[in-house]
Length: 526
Image (cartoon, rainbow, N blue to C red):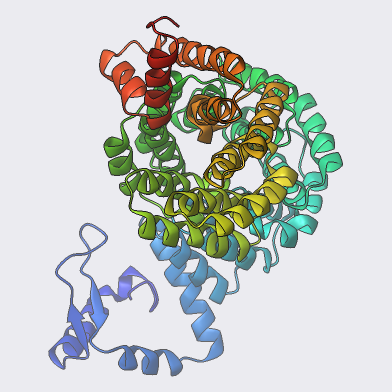
């Protein structure tokens, strides 16, 4: 108040006036103050505050906001949004834009993506110097990583940013993220490859390692979805070089790296490696307070436990994830899919169906996210199959194959495995075998595994079952031996005896394959 009314020379008079307002119960003292050594007061009623504010002239109001912003800034105010609004209302565009940028960055680490986008847009609506506009555009474009449904509305900003920002800079990387996300949602493979080529060739600016690491991670994820794993491997090699000394090995950059390393390990049927990388990513994200990376990587930790046959621990971890699924971008379907599959395995079919319908129709279809919708329809088909609603399950399987075939081919073998199981339940073993063989053929072409197949045992089991149902016993025995050997090849890499046992005995399809092998092959080899 002294700053607003003329500075410290007016302090004693201001204090006397404020004391009188406290005695009249217009103002109240707060027990605590945000700033050490300062007494904090507030209006007793919001109407009194609004009335006092309305009495100011337009010029005095703007001046007051500028003075208040400057005073708060000097005292170390941490609420960037409050500072931005003071300078915005005070007519200081560059100062307001600077604080809107900081507020958007704060939101990007753990608040709402939509809030981040709104704050960045408020800053961009102001008169700004060119470099500040570029940085705000970067923050705006970054939101597309976490909310891909925003991609279509942000392509103009992404184009402006990639032209205005130096290649390899942090804002340029954020623009690349928006372009990649938009192309992935629309299925524009030509743009994806063009942007990836630019990303491969870009020299990374010293202060751009974290945003570039995350952009490269997003690009690798999209390339995996598009069945272009060799291109993804080249980008991962670039990412590894970026993380080497004397590069940026800050906690936030390394957390992004470990998240990507965990996804890569998952694609290679390496559950322990996935778990180790993801745990490192969670710890680093917590150290620097990035709740969004912490949440997404925590989901990967939980999925690793599911893969290893520890569903109770997986459920506990999934329930403890800090942020909602809609804030997790490329991983928005991971948690609900695994939760619904686990519910189905436990026989909680009504609850599993409700959750699967939410993933397919509310989270996927309504938001325009075909991957989430496809995964939702897949797990819904699995739930319906187990519930005996075979015709409904068949419709969901076919819809899922169409959706994921266009947007996420890696998932299609898993959906076809569910189709094979469904056809067996319908008494159509020949069709079941055709679905299983198509799935195995697709998987062989892809090379990498789908994280939802838990090592592919689910598919291998129903391939064996289909061969048995069609009386192709010699082929069934060979497929069974191959399935058991595959499980053994994964199990032998699991050093922890408890995890090795749970992988073999608690994962239903693994347990069934081991039991069939014992019955039909008559030994424990693999």
